[in-house]
Image 1 (cartoon, rainbow, N blue to C red):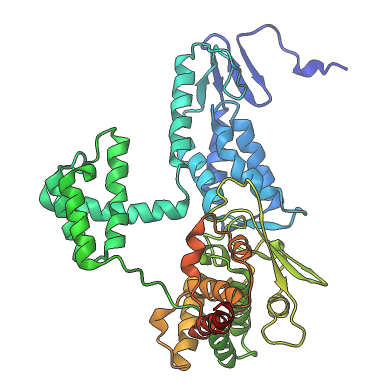
Image 2 (image 1 turned 60 degrees about the vertical axis):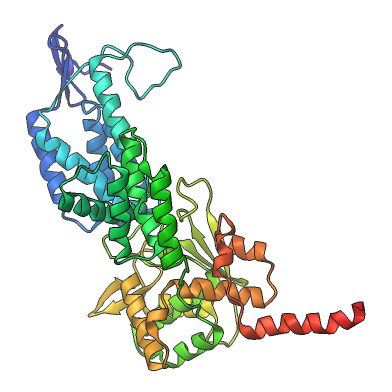
Length: 463
């Protein structure tokens, strides 16, 4: 049936599904009133720390509507939609962090300068990609360029970006002090920068800091002077003088783990959660970046272990991660089992269950390690975990500066080796892609002595 109240005579201007279409100016326009409301809603949304499924669906629907005019806008909707998918009920909430927040911020900043108009493109829009090499229009070229910049900005993981930014600031400060350009750099100035770094860094760190110089020259498509005989000679001299010795943190052994338990107060929510984190870190070999969120705002359910990714069963528990140092593009999921040790304080499943029971949450998309603070649930951040660890180690008489969150990963892998677990199983459990896991294995002197005793008993039989 035709709704005659909505029928209009032939015209060059028409509003269809809330979008103004002007065939004379060949423009698509967002109504000014609706655009103003959307800007206001985004401004309010950017202040939130959490949003319900219904709220996320509402903002995603409005942004999807705006994408009919904002070419390429749907690219910045993907993470918002991904956040909606795991939420089962309308009242379930997601934390607005990291990538979701960046998408909302992109829309907010874009609409601040957007006039609500865009050209009706003559060619097929980018959302439909074909193999024929058609000549893009001016509007499409601009859209393609914006997408090129977007994908290029996603070249590195967030953690890698932070590291490179540290290197960049150091190099920038050096060049500014000498009043020289950052690119290109002469071999003499590069040698001076190397020596400058040796005043506070070891050889291995110097090599890492030089990566940003290489990247800047590659971006500018210029030769990198480190390949010259002169600079290679300087680096070789630095290595010979400073040495290339690596000083990793010491492993947490079963003896130290047992000592840590004696410092735990089971009447304290923080201590119960801390102990659960210690056991999970020891048994899972997880990296600290997957165990703990840096802050409440930076929590990412794909990267950080959360309650939804923990499944308990009669055999124990299964922990699932979808984004790690070696899994960047969701090409697979990492599933690690935890054992049940009946009646033992060292049972990771029992400790984790107790932590969940002591600090219940209305939904599961929260950090696996939550504790109660002033009647509020708070995630155990890495800094909070490390502070509590150092407190325990100090009370036990250990030098806490020699240990870190990585000590559990190293200690668990070493203990597995001493228990006779094959190295390839250790590599799989710890999600090591290369032989780098061998650097984590640090067999005790007793274990080495056992190996020598086996040699000693076998040798006379062979002679």
